[in-house]
Length: 361
Image (cartoon, rainbow, N blue to C red; front, top):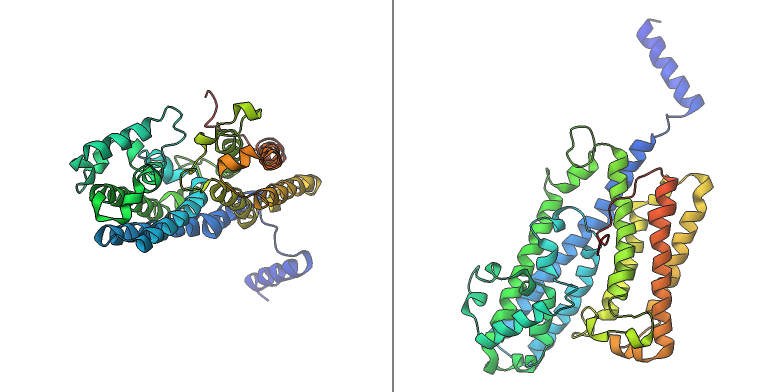
């Protein structure tokens, strides 16, 4: 038997007796990132793009032939894009943070009402630039996205959208919806491009400008959860739920005009759980840290269950002591999830927590 054959036999024998070499922690980290991208992030962006196309089409049909039935189709489309946006909004990394896309898609929180005043001014003046081809893009980011579109569709005077008497308002809604559709397409394209952000994130290394090694790439994924939980607790719930009932601010609730606040909160938290499951991030935890996965599972289970038991608008939830207490409990649970990801899981995986977008606010 020659040397080559002996080496081949030895290799087969070693594989049978000792098993194949275990995947390195670096390989496992990249696998988790790949799973997050292919299992959740890309599908979420596809759904958002589809929802944006549908809404733009529905508004176009409304403007062409106003009717109560067509207006209801637009409202159904807006409900759909709120749910799709919830999925995309938790991925605050990569393309959405470039070219002010996040602010263009949703200028919020807007505590001083800048966006509202600008939208009202455009409607009052019937600004032709805002409804011209490409003209809206020259306007402030405050009038380009979902918050602006919500007021146009649901704010004062919107009942005339089903009639021909307010054609300008419908054309303005159409321009905003086209802009949202364009942005959704840009996001999906950049995530799917062969040399796009997904490829960059999946291939960390010394020549990678963003992720020099697997730990940096994995830290970015964990930070999506840690920073996301912080934002959910502090801004998306805390923006309208005060420390006491006297400090509640129901008018600050996101998507309150369309009665989609609860829809958005439910979808956002459930999608964080789905991302966690699809990424299989728990498989990286050492056996001694299984309790972290159990704590995360507990938080998602009870947070989602509490939201599922609620009903009504943001104002109605805050006015009802029992419902308000449940919402406050969700906030407490999410704060715990923030610690599970940002402290416990980060330490267990020997990672460095990334900078929070809320620091310094």
